[in-house]
Image (cartoon, rainbow, N blue to C red; front, side, top):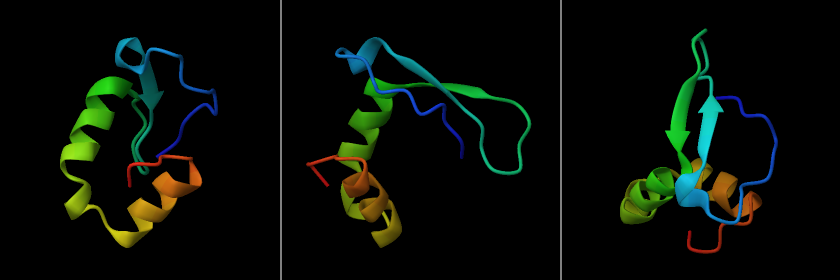
Length: 62
């Protein structure tokens, strides 16, 4: 999955991030606030690698 490297805005719920999944050619716009909400509610199901990646990004609720 790729991303542009920009920092999220102060109000993430209004931000759409364009990503490209590995092996795909089309980009998908993901609403950052929705993604965070879903990830938080499913944090028990995240893999150790996903937890590590989020911690590396500075996510403190992992």
